[in-house]
Image 1 (cartoon, one colour):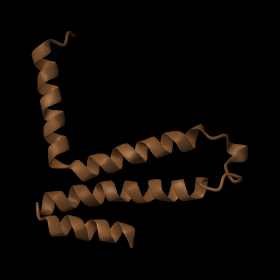
Image 2 (cartoon, rainbow, N blue to C red):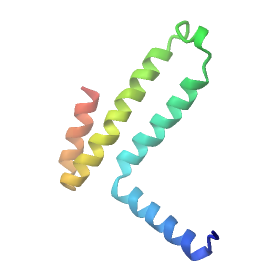
Image 3 (cartoon, helix red, strand yellow):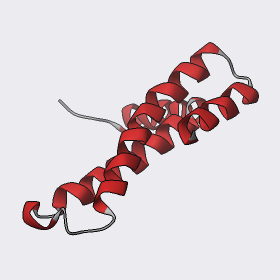
Image 4 (cartoon, rainbow, N blue to C red):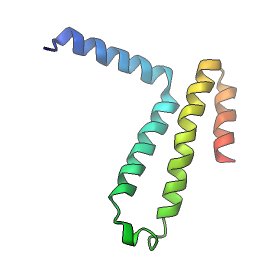
Length: 92
C-alpha cells in the first residue's frame, strides 16, 4: 500500500474542511486530549495532593461534553447565537 502525494493532499484538504466546519468542536477535542494526556502522566499516589488535579479533570469532562454539543449545534444550524448559547450552557 503506497500513499502518493495526491492522496495526502486530498486527506489534508478534507481535514481542513472539517476544521473549518467544526472549529469549536475541534478546539474542544484538542484541549481535552492535551489535558487528559497530562493527567494520565501524573503518578497515582500524588494525584490527590495536587491542588489542580480535580479542577483539570472536571474541565476535561466539560470539554468532552462540549465536543458533542458543538458538533450537534453546528449540524442543526450555522447561527452564531446558537453557538453562544452552547458556550453559556457549558460555562453555567
